[in-house]
Image 1 (cartoon, rainbow, N blue to C red):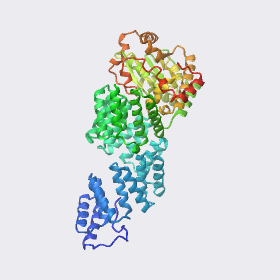
Image 2 (image 1 turned 30 degrees about the vertical axis):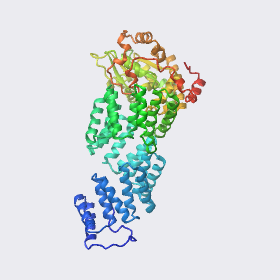
Image 3 (image 1 turned 90 degrees about the vertical axis):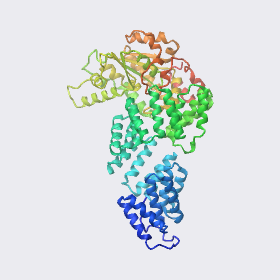
Length: 630
Protein backbone atom coordinates (compact mmCIF):
# COMPACT_ATOMS: atom_id res chain seq x y z
CA UNK A 1 0.00 0.00 0.00
CA UNK A 2 1.60 3.28 -1.16
CA UNK A 3 1.22 6.19 1.25
CA UNK A 4 0.94 9.84 0.30
CA UNK A 5 3.03 12.54 1.91
CA UNK A 6 1.21 14.07 4.85
CA UNK A 7 -0.31 10.76 6.06
CA UNK A 8 2.26 10.22 8.79
CA UNK A 9 1.70 10.47 12.50
CA UNK A 10 1.83 14.15 13.60
CA UNK A 11 3.28 13.05 16.94
CA UNK A 12 6.42 11.64 15.30
CA UNK A 13 9.56 12.98 16.98
CA UNK A 14 10.63 16.17 15.19
CA UNK A 15 13.71 16.06 13.02
CA UNK A 16 15.83 18.60 11.24
CA UNK A 17 14.31 18.61 7.75
CA UNK A 18 16.61 19.37 4.80
CA UNK A 19 15.31 22.17 2.64
CA UNK A 20 14.66 20.01 -0.41
CA UNK A 21 13.59 16.82 1.44
CA UNK A 22 9.80 17.36 1.30
CA UNK A 23 9.99 18.46 -2.34
CA UNK A 24 11.96 15.34 -3.26
CA UNK A 25 9.41 13.12 -1.48
CA UNK A 26 6.49 14.85 -3.19
CA UNK A 27 8.17 14.43 -6.56
CA UNK A 28 8.92 10.75 -5.80
CA UNK A 29 5.28 10.08 -4.88
CA UNK A 30 4.14 11.84 -8.07
CA UNK A 31 6.44 9.73 -10.24
CA UNK A 32 5.37 6.59 -8.36
CA UNK A 33 1.69 7.30 -9.01
CA UNK A 34 2.28 7.82 -12.73
CA UNK A 35 4.20 4.54 -13.00
CA UNK A 36 7.66 5.98 -13.56
CA UNK A 37 9.24 3.54 -11.11
CA UNK A 38 12.88 4.22 -12.02
CA UNK A 39 12.48 7.94 -11.42
CA UNK A 40 10.45 7.35 -8.23
CA UNK A 41 13.13 5.06 -6.79
CA UNK A 42 15.88 7.60 -7.51
CA UNK A 43 13.89 10.41 -5.90
CA UNK A 44 13.05 8.38 -2.76
CA UNK A 45 16.75 7.55 -2.40
CA UNK A 46 17.73 11.19 -2.94
CA UNK A 47 15.31 12.25 -0.23
CA UNK A 48 16.63 9.65 2.21
CA UNK A 49 20.27 10.30 1.36
CA UNK A 50 19.74 14.01 1.89
CA UNK A 51 18.90 13.20 5.50
CA UNK A 52 15.10 13.37 5.11
CA UNK A 53 14.32 10.09 6.91
CA UNK A 54 10.56 10.12 6.50
CA UNK A 55 8.60 6.87 7.13
CA UNK A 56 6.66 7.31 3.88
CA UNK A 57 9.87 7.47 1.87
CA UNK A 58 11.03 4.22 3.49
CA UNK A 59 7.66 2.49 3.07
CA UNK A 60 7.09 3.49 -0.56
CA UNK A 61 10.66 2.62 -1.52
CA UNK A 62 10.05 -0.78 0.09
CA UNK A 63 7.08 -1.27 -2.23
CA UNK A 64 9.31 -0.66 -5.24
CA UNK A 65 11.94 -3.09 -3.94
CA UNK A 66 9.28 -5.76 -3.32
CA UNK A 67 7.61 -5.35 -6.70
CA UNK A 68 10.95 -5.58 -8.51
CA UNK A 69 12.01 -8.77 -6.71
CA UNK A 70 14.43 -7.24 -4.19
CA UNK A 71 12.60 -8.64 -1.21
CA UNK A 72 15.43 -8.63 1.30
CA UNK A 73 16.10 -4.94 0.60
CA UNK A 74 12.36 -4.33 0.92
CA UNK A 75 12.36 -6.03 4.32
CA UNK A 76 15.19 -3.84 5.56
CA UNK A 77 13.58 -0.60 4.37
CA UNK A 78 10.13 -1.52 5.76
CA UNK A 79 11.72 -2.11 9.15
CA UNK A 80 13.23 1.38 8.96
CA UNK A 81 9.74 2.77 8.24
CA UNK A 82 8.17 1.24 11.35
CA UNK A 83 11.22 2.09 13.44
CA UNK A 84 10.84 5.71 12.35
CA UNK A 85 7.12 5.72 13.15
CA UNK A 86 5.84 2.79 15.26
CA UNK A 87 2.26 3.99 14.65
CA UNK A 88 2.46 3.94 10.84
CA UNK A 89 -0.27 1.39 9.96
CA UNK A 90 0.41 1.24 6.21
CA UNK A 91 4.02 0.23 6.78
CA UNK A 92 2.92 -2.67 8.98
CA UNK A 93 0.46 -3.71 6.25
CA UNK A 94 3.26 -3.73 3.68
CA UNK A 95 5.61 -5.52 6.05
CA UNK A 96 3.02 -8.23 6.69
CA UNK A 97 2.44 -8.67 2.97
CA UNK A 98 6.19 -9.06 2.41
CA UNK A 99 6.61 -11.58 5.22
CA UNK A 100 3.81 -13.61 3.62
CA UNK A 101 5.66 -13.62 0.28
CA UNK A 102 8.82 -14.73 2.09
CA UNK A 103 6.92 -17.64 3.66
CA UNK A 104 7.17 -16.31 7.19
CA UNK A 105 3.50 -16.55 8.07
CA UNK A 106 3.94 -15.99 11.82
CA UNK A 107 5.66 -12.65 11.25
CA UNK A 108 3.16 -11.81 8.51
CA UNK A 109 0.32 -12.37 10.96
CA UNK A 110 1.98 -10.29 13.70
CA UNK A 111 2.64 -7.34 11.39
CA UNK A 112 -0.84 -7.38 9.83
CA UNK A 113 -2.56 -7.59 13.21
CA UNK A 114 -0.44 -4.62 14.36
CA UNK A 115 -1.59 -2.67 11.30
CA UNK A 116 -5.23 -3.41 12.13
CA UNK A 117 -4.70 -2.49 15.77
CA UNK A 118 -3.65 0.95 14.54
CA UNK A 119 -6.32 1.16 11.82
CA UNK A 120 -9.13 -1.43 12.34
CA UNK A 121 -11.08 -0.41 9.24
CA UNK A 122 -8.37 -0.84 6.63
CA UNK A 123 -9.91 -3.12 3.96
CA UNK A 124 -6.53 -3.88 2.37
CA UNK A 125 -5.05 -5.08 5.65
CA UNK A 126 -8.16 -7.19 6.23
CA UNK A 127 -7.78 -8.80 2.80
CA UNK A 128 -4.15 -9.57 3.61
CA UNK A 129 -5.12 -10.97 7.00
CA UNK A 130 -7.65 -13.28 5.35
CA UNK A 131 -4.99 -14.48 2.92
CA UNK A 132 -2.53 -15.16 5.75
CA UNK A 133 -5.12 -17.08 7.76
CA UNK A 134 -5.94 -19.08 4.61
CA UNK A 135 -2.29 -20.10 4.22
CA UNK A 136 -2.14 -20.98 7.91
CA UNK A 137 -5.12 -23.30 7.44
CA UNK A 138 -7.42 -21.21 9.66
CA UNK A 139 -10.19 -20.95 7.09
CA UNK A 140 -12.87 -19.70 9.49
CA UNK A 141 -10.77 -16.65 10.40
CA UNK A 142 -9.75 -16.22 6.77
CA UNK A 143 -13.42 -16.09 5.81
CA UNK A 144 -14.32 -13.67 8.60
CA UNK A 145 -11.48 -11.25 7.75
CA UNK A 146 -12.28 -11.26 4.04
CA UNK A 147 -16.00 -10.74 4.61
CA UNK A 148 -15.16 -7.83 6.95
CA UNK A 149 -13.05 -6.29 4.21
CA UNK A 150 -15.97 -6.60 1.80
CA UNK A 151 -18.31 -4.93 4.29
CA UNK A 152 -16.01 -1.91 4.14
CA UNK A 153 -15.50 -2.11 0.37
CA UNK A 154 -18.16 -4.35 -1.26
CA UNK A 155 -16.93 -3.97 -4.83
CA UNK A 156 -13.29 -4.86 -4.34
CA UNK A 157 -12.46 -7.45 -7.03
CA UNK A 158 -9.32 -8.61 -5.17
CA UNK A 159 -11.27 -9.33 -2.00
CA UNK A 160 -13.94 -11.18 -3.98
CA UNK A 161 -11.27 -13.24 -5.73
CA UNK A 162 -9.68 -14.12 -2.38
CA UNK A 163 -13.12 -14.97 -1.00
CA UNK A 164 -13.60 -17.39 -3.87
CA UNK A 165 -10.30 -19.08 -3.00
CA UNK A 166 -11.32 -19.44 0.65
CA UNK A 167 -14.71 -20.90 -0.27
CA UNK A 168 -12.91 -23.32 -2.61
CA UNK A 169 -10.67 -24.51 0.23
CA UNK A 170 -13.73 -24.88 2.45
CA UNK A 171 -15.26 -27.13 -0.19
CA UNK A 172 -18.07 -24.66 -0.94
CA UNK A 173 -17.56 -24.64 -4.68
CA UNK A 174 -20.86 -22.94 -5.55
CA UNK A 175 -19.97 -19.94 -3.37
CA UNK A 176 -16.41 -20.02 -4.71
CA UNK A 177 -17.75 -19.83 -8.25
CA UNK A 178 -20.16 -17.00 -7.44
CA UNK A 179 -17.48 -14.88 -5.72
CA UNK A 180 -14.92 -15.40 -8.48
CA UNK A 181 -17.39 -14.61 -11.25
CA UNK A 182 -18.39 -11.44 -9.36
CA UNK A 183 -14.72 -10.48 -9.14
CA UNK A 184 -14.39 -10.91 -12.91
CA UNK A 185 -17.49 -8.79 -13.53
CA UNK A 186 -15.69 -5.94 -11.76
CA UNK A 187 -12.30 -6.67 -13.33
CA UNK A 188 -12.69 -8.84 -16.44
CA UNK A 189 -9.01 -8.81 -17.32
CA UNK A 190 -7.56 -10.14 -14.07
CA UNK A 191 -5.43 -13.15 -15.06
CA UNK A 192 -5.27 -14.45 -11.47
CA UNK A 193 -9.07 -14.50 -11.18
CA UNK A 194 -9.37 -16.40 -14.49
CA UNK A 195 -6.74 -18.87 -13.26
CA UNK A 196 -8.63 -19.36 -9.99
CA UNK A 197 -11.87 -19.79 -11.93
CA UNK A 198 -10.22 -22.57 -13.90
CA UNK A 199 -9.29 -24.31 -10.63
CA UNK A 200 -12.87 -24.07 -9.36
CA UNK A 201 -14.31 -25.44 -12.60
CA UNK A 202 -11.76 -28.28 -12.41
CA UNK A 203 -12.92 -29.19 -8.90
CA UNK A 204 -16.53 -29.04 -10.11
CA UNK A 205 -15.64 -31.57 -12.80
CA UNK A 206 -16.24 -29.10 -15.61
CA UNK A 207 -12.92 -29.63 -17.37
CA UNK A 208 -13.92 -27.86 -20.60
CA UNK A 209 -14.66 -24.64 -18.69
CA UNK A 210 -11.55 -25.14 -16.57
CA UNK A 211 -9.48 -25.35 -19.73
CA UNK A 212 -11.08 -22.26 -21.27
CA UNK A 213 -10.63 -20.14 -18.11
CA UNK A 214 -6.99 -21.13 -17.69
CA UNK A 215 -6.19 -20.45 -21.34
CA UNK A 216 -7.86 -17.04 -20.95
CA UNK A 217 -5.63 -16.35 -17.94
CA UNK A 218 -2.56 -17.16 -20.03
CA UNK A 219 -3.74 -14.92 -22.87
CA UNK A 220 -3.75 -12.06 -20.37
CA UNK A 221 -0.47 -13.07 -18.71
CA UNK A 222 1.53 -15.55 -20.82
CA UNK A 223 4.44 -15.81 -18.38
CA UNK A 224 2.43 -16.96 -15.35
CA UNK A 225 4.17 -20.16 -14.27
CA UNK A 226 1.26 -21.11 -11.95
CA UNK A 227 -1.27 -20.88 -14.78
CA UNK A 228 0.91 -23.08 -17.02
CA UNK A 229 1.18 -25.60 -14.19
CA UNK A 230 -2.60 -25.57 -13.66
CA UNK A 231 -3.13 -25.96 -17.39
CA UNK A 232 -0.93 -29.05 -17.33
CA UNK A 233 -2.98 -30.54 -14.51
CA UNK A 234 -6.23 -29.92 -16.39
CA UNK A 235 -4.78 -31.60 -19.47
CA UNK A 236 -3.79 -34.54 -17.25
CA UNK A 237 -7.36 -34.89 -16.03
CA UNK A 238 -8.52 -34.74 -19.64
CA UNK A 239 -6.17 -37.62 -20.42
CA UNK A 240 -3.96 -35.51 -22.72
CA UNK A 241 -0.62 -36.31 -21.10
CA UNK A 242 1.48 -34.91 -23.95
CA UNK A 243 -0.07 -31.47 -23.45
CA UNK A 244 0.08 -31.92 -19.68
CA UNK A 245 3.81 -32.56 -19.92
CA UNK A 246 4.40 -29.62 -22.26
CA UNK A 247 2.50 -27.16 -20.05
CA UNK A 248 4.26 -28.33 -16.89
CA UNK A 249 7.67 -28.07 -18.53
CA UNK A 250 6.75 -24.53 -19.65
CA UNK A 251 5.96 -23.69 -16.02
CA UNK A 252 9.38 -24.99 -14.99
CA UNK A 253 11.05 -23.05 -17.77
CA UNK A 254 9.58 -19.88 -16.23
CA UNK A 255 10.40 -20.98 -12.66
CA UNK A 256 12.98 -23.81 -12.73
CA UNK A 257 12.80 -24.51 -9.00
CA UNK A 258 9.02 -24.44 -8.72
CA UNK A 259 8.43 -27.20 -6.19
CA UNK A 260 4.74 -27.62 -7.03
CA UNK A 261 5.41 -27.86 -10.76
CA UNK A 262 8.19 -30.41 -10.15
CA UNK A 263 5.71 -32.42 -8.10
CA UNK A 264 3.12 -32.29 -10.89
CA UNK A 265 5.82 -33.33 -13.36
CA UNK A 266 6.54 -36.37 -11.20
CA UNK A 267 2.86 -37.29 -11.12
CA UNK A 268 2.62 -37.02 -14.91
CA UNK A 269 5.70 -39.25 -15.26
CA UNK A 270 3.97 -41.78 -12.97
CA UNK A 271 0.97 -41.84 -15.30
CA UNK A 272 3.32 -42.34 -18.24
CA UNK A 273 4.94 -45.31 -16.50
CA UNK A 274 8.29 -43.54 -16.09
CA UNK A 275 8.73 -44.47 -12.43
CA UNK A 276 12.46 -43.77 -12.13
CA UNK A 277 12.09 -40.28 -13.61
CA UNK A 278 9.00 -39.67 -11.45
CA UNK A 279 10.96 -40.41 -8.26
CA UNK A 280 13.71 -38.04 -9.35
CA UNK A 281 11.28 -35.18 -10.03
CA UNK A 282 9.45 -35.74 -6.75
CA UNK A 283 12.68 -35.74 -4.74
CA UNK A 284 13.76 -32.55 -6.54
CA UNK A 285 10.43 -31.01 -5.57
CA UNK A 286 11.12 -31.76 -1.90
CA UNK A 287 14.69 -30.43 -2.19
CA UNK A 288 13.27 -27.14 -3.44
CA UNK A 289 10.61 -27.06 -0.72
CA UNK A 290 10.55 -29.54 2.13
CA UNK A 291 6.92 -28.52 2.76
CA UNK A 292 5.77 -29.84 -0.65
CA UNK A 293 3.63 -32.55 0.90
CA UNK A 294 1.94 -33.73 -2.29
CA UNK A 295 5.38 -34.86 -3.44
CA UNK A 296 5.86 -36.77 -0.17
CA UNK A 297 2.51 -38.45 -0.74
CA UNK A 298 3.31 -39.37 -4.34
CA UNK A 299 6.64 -40.88 -3.25
CA UNK A 300 4.82 -42.90 -0.59
CA UNK A 301 2.82 -44.60 -3.34
CA UNK A 302 6.06 -45.61 -5.10
CA UNK A 303 7.61 -47.41 -2.12
CA UNK A 304 9.18 -50.72 -3.03
CA UNK A 305 11.03 -51.62 0.18
CA UNK A 306 10.71 -51.05 3.92
CA UNK A 307 14.02 -49.19 3.76
CA UNK A 308 12.50 -46.65 1.38
CA UNK A 309 9.55 -46.25 3.72
CA UNK A 310 11.82 -45.64 6.72
CA UNK A 311 13.88 -43.14 4.71
CA UNK A 312 10.77 -41.19 3.72
CA UNK A 313 9.59 -41.11 7.34
CA UNK A 314 12.95 -39.52 8.24
CA UNK A 315 12.66 -36.99 5.40
CA UNK A 316 9.20 -35.99 6.57
CA UNK A 317 10.43 -35.18 10.09
CA UNK A 318 11.58 -31.83 8.68
CA UNK A 319 8.01 -30.90 7.66
CA UNK A 320 6.53 -28.18 9.87
CA UNK A 321 3.00 -29.52 10.16
CA UNK A 322 1.81 -26.59 12.29
CA UNK A 323 1.96 -24.20 9.32
CA UNK A 324 0.45 -26.53 6.71
CA UNK A 325 -2.89 -25.81 5.09
CA UNK A 326 -5.51 -28.56 5.65
CA UNK A 327 -4.93 -29.84 2.09
CA UNK A 328 -1.17 -30.12 2.56
CA UNK A 329 -1.63 -31.61 6.00
CA UNK A 330 -3.86 -34.30 4.46
CA UNK A 331 -1.14 -35.16 1.93
CA UNK A 332 1.44 -35.33 4.73
CA UNK A 333 -0.69 -37.65 6.86
CA UNK A 334 -1.55 -39.93 3.92
CA UNK A 335 2.17 -40.18 3.14
CA UNK A 336 3.01 -41.12 6.73
CA UNK A 337 0.21 -43.67 6.77
CA UNK A 338 1.50 -45.28 3.57
CA UNK A 339 5.02 -45.48 5.00
CA UNK A 340 3.86 -47.17 8.21
CA UNK A 341 1.62 -49.50 6.18
CA UNK A 342 4.67 -50.54 4.17
CA UNK A 343 6.62 -51.44 7.31
CA UNK A 344 3.50 -53.20 8.65
CA UNK A 345 3.02 -50.90 11.62
CA UNK A 346 -0.74 -50.80 11.15
CA UNK A 347 -1.47 -49.00 14.43
CA UNK A 348 0.62 -46.01 13.40
CA UNK A 349 -0.73 -46.25 9.86
CA UNK A 350 -4.27 -46.07 11.26
CA UNK A 351 -3.50 -43.03 13.42
CA UNK A 352 -2.13 -41.09 10.46
CA UNK A 353 -4.99 -42.28 8.25
CA UNK A 354 -7.55 -40.85 10.69
CA UNK A 355 -5.78 -37.48 10.61
CA UNK A 356 -5.37 -37.59 6.83
CA UNK A 357 -9.07 -38.00 6.19
CA UNK A 358 -9.98 -35.50 8.91
CA UNK A 359 -7.98 -32.78 7.14
CA UNK A 360 -9.19 -33.90 3.74
CA UNK A 361 -12.82 -33.44 4.80
CA UNK A 362 -12.06 -29.85 5.83
CA UNK A 363 -11.21 -28.93 2.25
CA UNK A 364 -13.38 -31.51 0.45
CA UNK A 365 -16.59 -32.26 2.41
CA UNK A 366 -18.27 -35.58 1.73
CA UNK A 367 -20.53 -35.71 -1.31
CA UNK A 368 -22.34 -38.83 -0.10
CA UNK A 369 -25.81 -37.26 0.07
CA UNK A 370 -25.84 -36.09 -3.54
CA UNK A 371 -24.44 -39.42 -4.73
CA UNK A 372 -26.99 -41.43 -2.75
CA UNK A 373 -29.75 -39.33 -4.29
CA UNK A 374 -28.42 -40.00 -7.80
CA UNK A 375 -28.23 -43.74 -7.11
CA UNK A 376 -31.81 -43.82 -5.86
CA UNK A 377 -33.03 -41.93 -8.94
CA UNK A 378 -31.06 -44.20 -11.26
CA UNK A 379 -33.11 -47.26 -10.36
CA UNK A 380 -36.46 -45.51 -10.13
CA UNK A 381 -36.55 -43.58 -13.41
CA UNK A 382 -36.54 -46.46 -15.85
CA UNK A 383 -39.42 -45.15 -18.00
CA UNK A 384 -37.69 -41.88 -18.87
CA UNK A 385 -34.77 -43.77 -20.38
CA UNK A 386 -36.77 -45.81 -22.88
CA UNK A 387 -36.58 -45.10 -26.61
CA UNK A 388 -38.54 -46.03 -29.70
CA UNK A 389 -35.54 -45.27 -31.92
CA UNK A 390 -33.72 -48.50 -31.15
CA UNK A 391 -31.33 -50.61 -33.20
CA UNK A 392 -30.28 -54.01 -31.88
CA UNK A 393 -26.67 -53.33 -32.94
CA UNK A 394 -26.44 -49.98 -31.16
CA UNK A 395 -23.51 -50.01 -28.80
CA UNK A 396 -21.76 -52.91 -30.52
CA UNK A 397 -18.14 -53.13 -29.41
CA UNK A 398 -18.70 -50.86 -26.40
CA UNK A 399 -17.60 -52.21 -23.02
CA UNK A 400 -18.53 -50.23 -19.91
CA UNK A 401 -16.65 -51.01 -16.68
CA UNK A 402 -18.62 -49.86 -13.62
CA UNK A 403 -18.37 -50.23 -9.87
CA UNK A 404 -17.01 -48.56 -6.76
CA UNK A 405 -13.59 -46.85 -6.80
CA UNK A 406 -10.75 -49.22 -5.92
CA UNK A 407 -12.76 -52.31 -6.82
CA UNK A 408 -10.22 -53.77 -9.29
CA UNK A 409 -11.46 -51.81 -12.29
CA UNK A 410 -8.07 -50.40 -13.33
CA UNK A 411 -6.52 -53.87 -13.24
CA UNK A 412 -9.35 -55.16 -15.43
CA UNK A 413 -9.04 -52.25 -17.85
CA UNK A 414 -5.29 -52.87 -18.12
CA UNK A 415 -5.88 -56.58 -18.78
CA UNK A 416 -8.40 -55.88 -21.55
CA UNK A 417 -6.09 -53.26 -23.04
CA UNK A 418 -3.58 -56.03 -23.78
CA UNK A 419 -5.83 -56.80 -26.76
CA UNK A 420 -4.52 -54.59 -29.60
CA UNK A 421 -8.04 -54.36 -31.05
CA UNK A 422 -9.30 -52.68 -27.89
CA UNK A 423 -9.14 -48.91 -27.39
CA UNK A 424 -9.19 -47.91 -23.74
CA UNK A 425 -10.99 -44.62 -23.10
CA UNK A 426 -10.07 -44.26 -19.44
CA UNK A 427 -12.54 -42.48 -17.15
CA UNK A 428 -14.47 -40.90 -20.01
CA UNK A 429 -17.33 -38.48 -19.38
CA UNK A 430 -18.71 -39.01 -22.88
CA UNK A 431 -21.70 -41.11 -21.84
CA UNK A 432 -22.84 -38.44 -19.39
CA UNK A 433 -22.46 -35.79 -22.11
CA UNK A 434 -24.36 -37.93 -24.62
CA UNK A 435 -27.24 -38.41 -22.16
CA UNK A 436 -27.36 -34.67 -21.45
CA UNK A 437 -27.51 -33.98 -25.20
CA UNK A 438 -30.28 -36.53 -25.71
CA UNK A 439 -32.32 -35.03 -22.85
CA UNK A 440 -31.89 -31.59 -24.34
CA UNK A 441 -33.15 -32.80 -27.71
CA UNK A 442 -36.13 -34.56 -26.10
CA UNK A 443 -37.14 -31.36 -24.35
CA UNK A 444 -36.97 -29.44 -27.64
CA UNK A 445 -39.54 -31.85 -29.15
CA UNK A 446 -37.25 -32.36 -32.12
CA UNK A 447 -38.52 -35.48 -33.89
CA UNK A 448 -35.14 -35.96 -35.61
CA UNK A 449 -33.12 -36.23 -32.43
CA UNK A 450 -30.39 -38.87 -32.26
CA UNK A 451 -30.15 -41.59 -29.63
CA UNK A 452 -27.47 -42.00 -26.99
CA UNK A 453 -25.37 -44.35 -29.12
CA UNK A 454 -25.12 -41.80 -31.93
CA UNK A 455 -24.11 -38.97 -29.61
CA UNK A 456 -21.63 -41.22 -27.81
CA UNK A 457 -20.10 -42.38 -31.10
CA UNK A 458 -19.46 -38.79 -32.12
CA UNK A 459 -17.60 -38.20 -28.88
CA UNK A 460 -15.80 -41.56 -28.89
CA UNK A 461 -15.50 -42.73 -32.52
CA UNK A 462 -14.13 -46.19 -33.30
CA UNK A 463 -11.70 -46.47 -36.19
CA UNK A 464 -12.68 -49.93 -37.41
CA UNK A 465 -9.36 -50.41 -39.17
CA UNK A 466 -7.59 -50.18 -35.80
CA UNK A 467 -10.07 -51.15 -33.10
CA UNK A 468 -13.14 -53.33 -32.69
CA UNK A 469 -13.83 -52.50 -29.05
CA UNK A 470 -13.63 -49.68 -26.55
CA UNK A 471 -13.51 -49.87 -22.76
CA UNK A 472 -15.01 -46.96 -20.84
CA UNK A 473 -14.00 -47.04 -17.16
CA UNK A 474 -16.11 -44.19 -15.80
CA UNK A 475 -17.18 -46.16 -12.73
CA UNK A 476 -20.21 -44.00 -11.95
CA UNK A 477 -21.76 -44.98 -15.27
CA UNK A 478 -23.56 -47.58 -13.14
CA UNK A 479 -25.98 -44.71 -12.50
CA UNK A 480 -26.75 -44.69 -16.24
CA UNK A 481 -27.30 -48.43 -16.79
CA UNK A 482 -30.93 -47.89 -17.83
CA UNK A 483 -29.74 -45.54 -20.58
CA UNK A 484 -27.06 -47.95 -21.76
CA UNK A 485 -29.44 -50.91 -21.80
CA UNK A 486 -32.22 -49.07 -23.65
CA UNK A 487 -30.16 -47.03 -26.12
CA UNK A 488 -27.10 -49.29 -26.61
CA UNK A 489 -28.50 -52.83 -26.36
CA UNK A 490 -25.40 -54.45 -27.90
CA UNK A 491 -23.06 -52.85 -25.33
CA UNK A 492 -21.50 -54.94 -22.55
CA UNK A 493 -21.41 -53.87 -18.90
CA UNK A 494 -18.87 -55.31 -16.47
CA UNK A 495 -19.53 -54.74 -12.78
CA UNK A 496 -16.34 -54.80 -10.71
CA UNK A 497 -16.70 -55.68 -7.05
CA UNK A 498 -14.62 -57.03 -4.19
CA UNK A 499 -14.90 -57.73 -0.47
CA UNK A 500 -16.72 -54.59 0.72
CA UNK A 501 -14.41 -54.10 3.72
CA UNK A 502 -11.27 -54.33 1.56
CA UNK A 503 -12.97 -51.95 -0.84
CA UNK A 504 -13.76 -49.39 1.88
CA UNK A 505 -10.24 -49.59 3.34
CA UNK A 506 -8.67 -49.12 -0.08
CA UNK A 507 -10.86 -46.07 -0.81
CA UNK A 508 -10.09 -44.63 2.62
CA UNK A 509 -6.33 -45.05 2.10
CA UNK A 510 -6.17 -43.75 -1.47
CA UNK A 511 -6.84 -40.00 -1.05
CA UNK A 512 -9.30 -40.04 -3.95
CA UNK A 513 -10.34 -36.68 -5.40
CA UNK A 514 -12.92 -35.17 -7.76
CA UNK A 515 -16.33 -36.64 -6.96
CA UNK A 516 -15.03 -39.24 -4.51
CA UNK A 517 -14.98 -37.05 -1.40
CA UNK A 518 -17.28 -39.47 0.45
CA UNK A 519 -14.36 -41.91 0.71
CA UNK A 520 -12.80 -39.78 3.49
CA UNK A 521 -15.71 -40.70 5.78
CA UNK A 522 -16.02 -44.38 6.71
CA UNK A 523 -19.76 -44.29 7.43
CA UNK A 524 -20.46 -42.47 4.17
CA UNK A 525 -18.28 -44.93 2.26
CA UNK A 526 -20.28 -47.81 3.68
CA UNK A 527 -23.63 -46.14 2.88
CA UNK A 528 -22.63 -45.43 -0.72
CA UNK A 529 -21.26 -48.95 -1.17
CA UNK A 530 -24.48 -50.50 0.17
CA UNK A 531 -26.63 -48.29 -2.09
CA UNK A 532 -24.41 -49.18 -5.04
CA UNK A 533 -24.63 -52.93 -4.35
CA UNK A 534 -28.43 -52.83 -4.01
CA UNK A 535 -28.81 -50.72 -7.17
CA UNK A 536 -26.60 -53.13 -9.13
CA UNK A 537 -28.63 -56.11 -7.94
CA UNK A 538 -31.80 -54.43 -9.23
CA UNK A 539 -30.14 -53.74 -12.58
CA UNK A 540 -28.81 -57.30 -12.85
CA UNK A 541 -32.35 -58.58 -12.33
CA UNK A 542 -33.61 -56.20 -15.04
CA UNK A 543 -30.82 -56.88 -17.53
CA UNK A 544 -29.36 -60.31 -16.61
CA UNK A 545 -27.69 -60.86 -19.98
CA UNK A 546 -26.11 -57.41 -20.22
CA UNK A 547 -24.11 -57.30 -16.98
CA UNK A 548 -21.16 -59.52 -15.99
CA UNK A 549 -19.92 -59.53 -12.39
CA UNK A 550 -16.13 -59.36 -12.19
CA UNK A 551 -15.24 -60.45 -8.66
CA UNK A 552 -11.74 -59.16 -7.90
CA UNK A 553 -11.12 -61.58 -5.03
CA UNK A 554 -12.08 -64.62 -7.09
CA UNK A 555 -10.04 -63.38 -10.03
CA UNK A 556 -6.72 -62.80 -8.19
CA UNK A 557 -7.03 -66.22 -6.51
CA UNK A 558 -7.63 -68.03 -9.83
CA UNK A 559 -6.75 -65.59 -12.65
CA UNK A 560 -6.88 -67.84 -15.71
CA UNK A 561 -10.14 -69.63 -14.90
CA UNK A 562 -11.99 -66.43 -14.11
CA UNK A 563 -10.51 -64.54 -17.05
CA UNK A 564 -11.63 -67.29 -19.46
CA UNK A 565 -15.21 -66.89 -18.18
CA UNK A 566 -15.13 -63.13 -18.75
CA UNK A 567 -13.52 -63.37 -22.19
CA UNK A 568 -16.06 -66.01 -23.22
CA UNK A 569 -18.88 -63.64 -22.20
CA UNK A 570 -17.24 -60.86 -24.25
CA UNK A 571 -16.79 -63.21 -27.25
CA UNK A 572 -13.02 -62.76 -27.09
CA UNK A 573 -10.41 -65.48 -27.42
CA UNK A 574 -8.09 -66.22 -24.52
CA UNK A 575 -4.47 -65.11 -24.84
CA UNK A 576 -1.82 -65.65 -22.19
CA UNK A 577 -0.75 -61.98 -22.54
CA UNK A 578 -3.92 -60.99 -20.71
CA UNK A 579 -2.44 -62.50 -17.54
CA UNK A 580 0.55 -60.13 -17.59
CA UNK A 581 -0.78 -56.59 -17.11
CA UNK A 582 2.65 -55.58 -15.75
CA UNK A 583 3.90 -55.72 -19.35
CA UNK A 584 1.37 -53.15 -20.49
CA UNK A 585 2.71 -49.85 -21.87
CA UNK A 586 -0.64 -48.08 -21.61
CA UNK A 587 -1.02 -44.77 -19.85
CA UNK A 588 -2.74 -45.11 -16.45
CA UNK A 589 -4.16 -41.81 -15.26
CA UNK A 590 -5.91 -42.82 -12.02
CA UNK A 591 -5.10 -43.30 -8.33
CA UNK A 592 -4.46 -46.98 -9.11
CA UNK A 593 -1.53 -46.11 -11.37
CA UNK A 594 1.12 -48.12 -9.49
CA UNK A 595 -1.06 -51.14 -8.72
CA UNK A 596 -2.01 -51.41 -12.39
CA UNK A 597 1.65 -51.84 -13.34
CA UNK A 598 2.25 -54.83 -11.03
CA UNK A 599 1.72 -58.56 -11.69
CA UNK A 600 -1.63 -60.03 -10.65
CA UNK A 601 -1.50 -60.70 -6.90
CA UNK A 602 -3.89 -61.64 -4.10
CA UNK A 603 -1.82 -59.96 -1.34
CA UNK A 604 -4.42 -57.29 -0.64
CA UNK A 605 -7.30 -59.74 -0.16
CA UNK A 606 -8.40 -59.66 3.48
CA UNK A 607 -6.07 -56.76 4.26
CA UNK A 608 -8.91 -54.94 5.99
CA UNK A 609 -8.44 -57.15 9.06
CA UNK A 610 -5.20 -55.27 9.82
CA UNK A 611 -7.39 -52.18 10.27
CA UNK A 612 -10.35 -53.87 11.94
CA UNK A 613 -10.56 -51.40 14.84
CA UNK A 614 -10.45 -48.39 12.53
CA UNK A 615 -13.12 -49.86 10.25
CA UNK A 616 -15.69 -50.71 12.94
CA UNK A 617 -18.14 -47.91 11.96
CA UNK A 618 -18.20 -49.11 8.35
CA UNK A 619 -18.33 -52.78 9.33
CA UNK A 620 -21.48 -52.19 11.39
CA UNK A 621 -23.30 -50.52 8.47
CA UNK A 622 -22.25 -53.23 6.00
CA UNK A 623 -23.22 -56.01 8.37
CA UNK A 624 -26.66 -54.54 9.08
CA UNK A 625 -27.31 -53.96 5.35
CA UNK A 626 -27.11 -57.64 4.47
CA UNK A 627 -24.32 -57.09 1.94
CA UNK A 628 -22.07 -60.12 2.21
CA UNK A 629 -18.63 -59.65 3.80
CA UNK A 630 -16.36 -62.32 2.34
